[in-house]
Image (tube, rainbow, N blue to C red; front, side, top):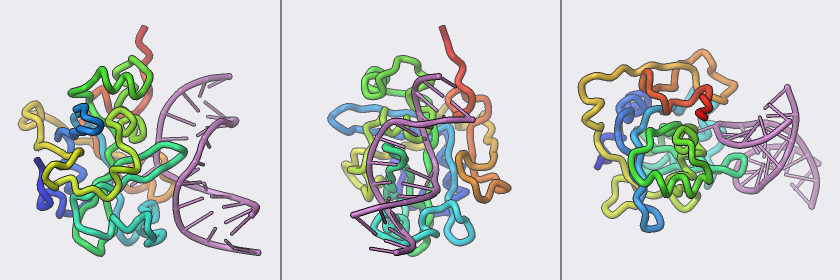
Length: 198
DNA sequence: AACGGGATGGTT
DNA sequence: ACCATCCCGTTG
C-alpha cells in the first residue's frame, strides 16, 4: 500500500508516479480495482482551477490537511475522487481521471448499468460510480490501516516499459496553457473519443 | 432565499 | 451541440 510519504511530494510528481498504480475499493464488502491510467494535478497558489484557491471552506478543508487523504467532491450530481498531496496548509491534490478495470468487473457493470468495459472507469465520475466512491469517502485516510480505499504500488506491467504523456486538463477553462494532465500513452482506457464496439 | 456555475456524462 | 441535475459559494 502506498504510504503518506509517497503522497507528500510535489503534486505533479505524485500525479505522474500514480500512473500504473492500482486503486482498490473494498466498499460494501466488494473488491473493485483498476490501474490508474490518467491523472490531473491541481496546484496551490497560482492555479485558479484548484478549488483550494477559490475558498477555504468545509468543502475544501481536507486539501489543506496532510497528504494521502481523499478529497471527494460532488459535481453535476456525480462525484470526483482526488488524493491530497504535499504538506498541511498547502491546498492541492491529484484528480484520478481514468482506470483500466482490474478486479470486480461484474460489480462495476452492475453499479454503472452498462456492459461496455470502456464505459466503466474512463472518466472521473464513471470510476467513482464503478468503485462505489461517494461523499462518504471524503476525508478518509487512504494510507490508514483497514482503509476501504487505498492505492498499491505500480503494477509490474509498467515497471520497465511505459510512456507518460501530458496535455492541458480536461474541462477547465483556465490555465489551458499548462500541461497538468498525465496519462499512459496508448492505453485504451484513457479518456477521449469513445469507440463504439458492436 | 435566490441565483449561477461547475475538475461530468449521456443524448441529439 | 445540448441539457439533466444538484451542490456549493456568493449575494441580497
